[in-house]
Length: 322
Ligand SMILES: NC(=O)c1ccc[n+]([C@@H]2O[C@H](COP(=O)([O-])OP(=O)(O)OC[C@H]3O[C@@H](n4cnc5c(N)ncnc54)[C@H](OP(=O)(O)O)[C@@H]3O)[C@@H](O)[C@H]2O)c1
Image (cartoon, rainbow, N blue to C red; front, side, top):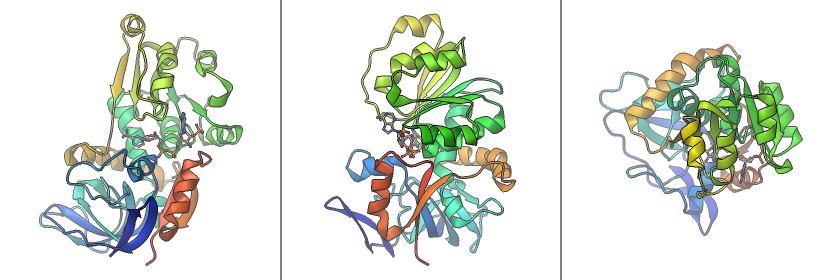
């Protein structure tokens, strides 16, 4: 099969070994995969795949089931599916544990379906399973126009959580307000904390933060009593000082969370939640995967540059020739 291989920091679509199918796994003929920020870090050597995962980039895909391993009854050959992967999506074929595979929601294309698993799993896991956001609680989403952000805004809208976004420019803010965010702030205009406090005088209940270091103090300031900060990335650095007094007096919780390295059982549990809560909303068209652009997979390098430029709104999808 062909796959994207990193050689001298360029991405080449070339022949590689086809992965073996083991019991409990599903082999998918990939029609489309999508880029995640983590791919850019993996490409530069900063985010190695977890033990046992494919060294090929790609954390999600949509395609057709080719064959299933012993013991798999969840899907059958010929089914149109999408999958949450620990790696291997930038390829003609991928094998993945059956629990991480779902049939494509009714009415969605392969390109749309490829843009769903990683960002909706991340947003749902961290807002509703880790932070335990309940209906009516107020949420701040940093990088609101990112793939994760555009998924999270729509989940907040549908599940009853008013949300405030931060992002890089006015065009992104407009797009996020149209998707259902209540208010927002352009991060290049200073600290977001005054704007958040104007929006929620008593502070917010949950913050989903992929920025880390440089936002930590303002995040703690913005949280209400018993607020939860879920840290999902370190785009703004890994080091910071915490005012432990704030943590103590407001009874705050800081939760670190990664999805990729979790067990198959844990990832399958997230996918099961998506199937019961989010799949019906996707099938009704109430939630949509927000797609910035689509590239043929042999142009993955250009697609990566597009993501790295911080101008994208939603997902960049790679199509695999059939
Ligand atoms: N822990 C997990 O399990 C998990 C899973 C998936 C994703 N993530 C993380 O979630 C984040 C979003 O992922 P994605 O793939 O959806 O990203 P994406 O679509 O590529 O969007 C990332 C956006 O982050 C903003 N940004 C970039 N550098 C920044 C900085 N230094 N400070 C503040 N904002 C910055 C930019 O938007 P603006 O210029 O508009 O702010 C950029 O467009 C990434 O950090 C990713 O690693 C974590």
